[in-house]
Length: 84
Image 1: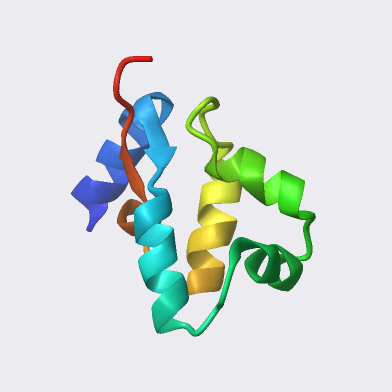
Image 2 (image 1 turned 90 degrees about the horizontal axis):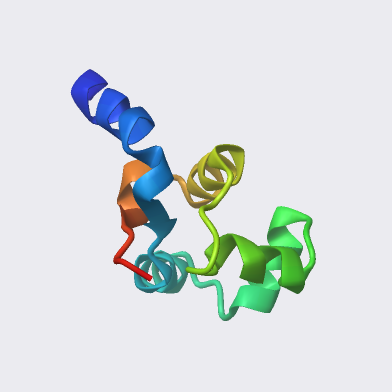
Protein backbone atom coordinates (compact mmCIF):
# COMPACT_ATOMS: atom_id res chain seq x y z
CA UNK A 1 0.00 0.00 0.00
CA UNK A 2 2.90 2.35 0.74
CA UNK A 3 4.17 1.95 -2.81
CA UNK A 4 0.74 2.84 -4.22
CA UNK A 5 0.62 5.90 -1.96
CA UNK A 6 4.08 7.06 -3.07
CA UNK A 7 3.15 6.47 -6.71
CA UNK A 8 -0.04 8.48 -6.20
CA UNK A 9 1.95 11.39 -4.76
CA UNK A 10 4.66 11.27 -7.44
CA UNK A 11 2.36 11.28 -10.47
CA UNK A 12 -0.49 13.27 -8.95
CA UNK A 13 -0.19 16.12 -11.50
CA UNK A 14 -0.93 13.68 -14.33
CA UNK A 15 -4.15 12.37 -12.83
CA UNK A 16 -7.84 13.13 -13.17
CA UNK A 17 -10.86 11.75 -11.37
CA UNK A 18 -12.52 8.91 -13.24
CA UNK A 19 -16.21 9.87 -13.45
CA UNK A 20 -17.20 6.37 -14.53
CA UNK A 21 -15.66 4.87 -11.41
CA UNK A 22 -17.42 7.52 -9.33
CA UNK A 23 -20.74 6.60 -10.96
CA UNK A 24 -20.14 2.89 -10.25
CA UNK A 25 -19.40 3.61 -6.60
CA UNK A 26 -22.40 5.95 -6.37
CA UNK A 27 -24.66 3.19 -7.70
CA UNK A 28 -23.34 0.77 -5.07
CA UNK A 29 -23.98 3.40 -2.38
CA UNK A 30 -27.44 4.15 -3.83
CA UNK A 31 -26.59 7.78 -4.61
CA UNK A 32 -28.79 8.70 -7.56
CA UNK A 33 -26.97 11.62 -9.18
CA UNK A 34 -24.18 14.17 -8.87
CA UNK A 35 -26.56 16.76 -7.41
CA UNK A 36 -27.33 14.40 -4.53
CA UNK A 37 -23.63 13.58 -4.07
CA UNK A 38 -22.73 17.28 -4.00
CA UNK A 39 -25.39 17.93 -1.37
CA UNK A 40 -24.10 15.02 0.74
CA UNK A 41 -20.56 16.41 0.47
CA UNK A 42 -21.76 19.89 1.49
CA UNK A 43 -20.83 21.59 -1.76
CA UNK A 44 -22.61 23.00 -4.77
CA UNK A 45 -23.18 20.97 -7.90
CA UNK A 46 -20.89 23.40 -9.74
CA UNK A 47 -18.07 22.76 -7.26
CA UNK A 48 -18.44 19.01 -7.71
CA UNK A 49 -18.61 19.43 -11.47
CA UNK A 50 -15.30 21.33 -11.40
CA UNK A 51 -13.69 18.62 -9.25
CA UNK A 52 -14.85 15.93 -11.71
CA UNK A 53 -13.94 17.93 -14.81
CA UNK A 54 -11.15 16.62 -17.01
CA UNK A 55 -10.22 20.21 -17.86
CA UNK A 56 -8.45 20.71 -14.53
CA UNK A 57 -6.22 18.62 -12.33
CA UNK A 58 -8.19 18.03 -9.15
CA UNK A 59 -6.90 19.43 -5.87
CA UNK A 60 -5.44 16.56 -3.87
CA UNK A 61 -7.58 17.37 -0.82
CA UNK A 62 -10.73 17.16 -2.98
CA UNK A 63 -9.73 13.72 -4.26
CA UNK A 64 -9.10 12.54 -0.72
CA UNK A 65 -12.35 14.04 0.60
CA UNK A 66 -14.37 12.41 -2.17
CA UNK A 67 -12.63 9.06 -1.69
CA UNK A 68 -13.09 9.17 2.08
CA UNK A 69 -16.76 9.99 1.71
CA UNK A 70 -17.26 7.11 -0.73
CA UNK A 71 -15.19 4.83 1.55
CA UNK A 72 -12.62 3.97 -1.13
CA UNK A 73 -8.94 4.67 -1.68
CA UNK A 74 -8.06 7.78 -3.74
CA UNK A 75 -6.34 5.33 -6.10
CA UNK A 76 -9.73 3.77 -6.82
CA UNK A 77 -11.20 6.96 -8.29
CA UNK A 78 -8.34 8.38 -10.34
CA UNK A 79 -6.94 7.63 -13.75
CA UNK A 80 -4.04 8.84 -15.83
CA UNK A 81 -4.82 11.96 -17.81
CA UNK A 82 -4.71 11.63 -21.59
CA UNK A 83 -3.08 14.40 -23.63
CA UNK A 84 -5.42 17.33 -24.06
